[in-house]
Length: 166
Image (cartoon, rainbow, N blue to C red):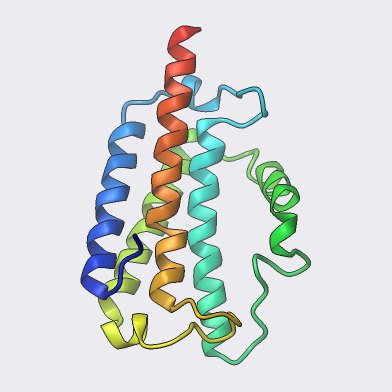
């Protein structure tokens, strides 16, 4: 169930990140870079999550500035996500494991700061500007943060099981 206020958002964001952080903290770069059958690695998933938090900040700031907000990004629609994510993996190909973890950590810290410096009213008293739907900034922040951390943890656990089976 989605968070309904700032306190819940802060709590779920921290909890889901901590679960993911515990999972990835002991992964070496060899395991992190090993591609699965879909040509995706743990590093790719971690880099992807850091990127999507940054997308959220772009959406939020563009909406607040009265600019056009492109979801998920300019030139893409939601039904283009597979293509967008494949192109993102190519753009992030040169990022190493340590850089991916650092990027995720920085994005997480920035997200926590965003939550802490915005009031409950800012986060939940109406739709995010420019989003053209009913989702509040808090709901968008949760989708980019806690929800993505949860799905990343699920992927990492499954991938680590596959790697153990060899």
